[in-house]
Length: 151
Image (cartoon, rainbow, N blue to C red):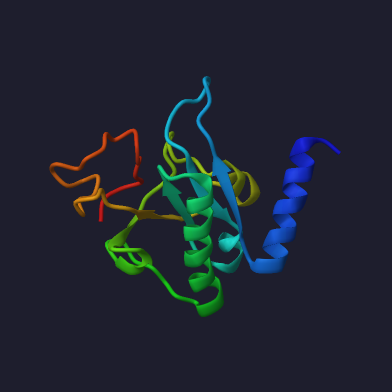
């Protein structure tokens, strides 16, 4: 069994067990950019896949699992511009929506379900001053936390 087959098998096992899996994408020399992670599996249940960018993989996985559990277990629906005050300690995350981009491309979800069926919502985190990537004075460059859109 090759690496891709094994990855897809493990991913399907997680989807069957929990309702979703989290996939992390890391920058490489050939594909530089910010690390990001996204869910795969929520589309099967009629929900958007969730994305977060610019954080380390363990943090991204924990945050996405928290959000996906709310969606899958409690049928919680997020809306564009919604602030989530209980995800990040001391800060609100903001939900944005948009199509996949070159920087945030959930390849495994699109390969599994098709580009037309995969809707995306991103949890966007603020800088230490509470500013978001679309706010004047945001402390980081756009390459640190690419976003799907604005609220």
